[in-house]
Image (tube, rainbow, N blue to C red; front, side):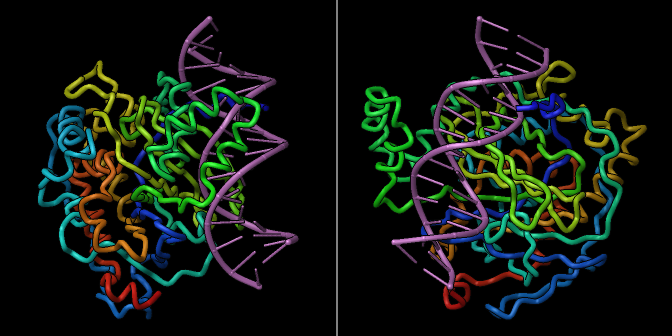
Length: 369
DNA sequence: CGAATTTGACCTGCGC
DNA sequence: GCGCAGGTCAAATTCG
């Protein structure tokens, strides 16, 4: 109950990780980035491609003109609606990797388990870099929490089948006292199907990263083997069932793992080219996340680069659907994040990181399991 | 007062 | 079947 008002602040840099549509018990692949050099530990499982992360350093980011504008463009282009992903074709996009046949669907690494999201999340171990020193970004406030709450209920239905939404709603209306029981009923016997998930991992002192969408926190759970709790967010837009999970790595407390699940059914609430007035500005309220002026550009970029250098992403694809995650797994939320990064000349690094990871061929993955 | 967060309870899936 | 852990709900609480 003791509510910490600080919770409402916003976010800083992105963390992005791979997702999975955990069809049935499909968990995210474990990932490990070791020590200082970004060198993945090879995985035995699939005999996939192995890359040395140490080779992947960040190229100097190209000077960006407009922050908000570019970001929003990208948001619109890639993130607005899930349906848009098909047409998204930025060559350097993080999502291209997911959408293309490139078997990067799964980046797998051996990992001593202490991962924040045991069994589902990944772990990053990096050389500690300068975390965001000051975070004062805005919060994603203003959403209609009630709707989101409702969506939350629907989530369960969606998991089991959208056709049951109405039916379940009726039940709820007629018997509010047993909502949970109803929920249980509904979900029983139905294989819960998760939306594609993408996780971003970044070094940040702020847990909840502002990706341009409005989120409402609907839960928090203590994570096993981690002193840090995991927070659950849901997109506040009506009808949008996108969820976001935020947790901090127990191994490296400076690392935040943000997992997106689902696709936004709406454009980002942030107005494109909002300039100084649009919501996008909140994204960059944090001096470390914005490029207030070209004067400070290098400095900020440097810090962001460090973050990204230490960030890597993975796509936790359910073992059975690895091959199909290419286009559908790209959540708009993640797209927004990637767009942001790409717009700032940072995404490439993220991609690089991903590509340097061990790539497991779908078949191999299946065999492995 | 509306919106967002907190937090304990509850539910589900999974491993043993 | 039981227990554990993850995930979600929703009343209470807090904030703007």
